[in-house]
Amino acid sequence: MDWTRPLGFLCALGVGLTVIGALLALATGPLVGSRATAAIVTVALVVASVVTAVAVGTRLSPEWLNNSGYWLGRQFP
Image (cartoon, rainbow, N blue to C red; front, top):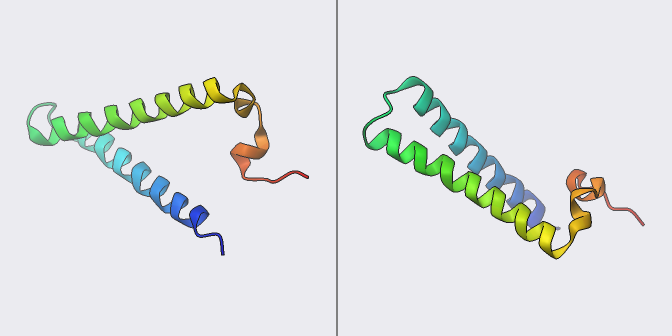
């Protein structure tokens, strides 16, 4: 069994839920204090990670942005 796909999905889900929680904390609470600071740092870290991943992926293989099989998880022969 390919365990990397479910593990990757769970990690992505965890990061997504964390960012949603951070955005909700910023939207509903005051923009000062340790909770707001933690939320801002979380969102900034995820944004920086995504931008870095796209930059590295584009530099190593520019075609991967146009490859729908990569993004949709399909394997073509």
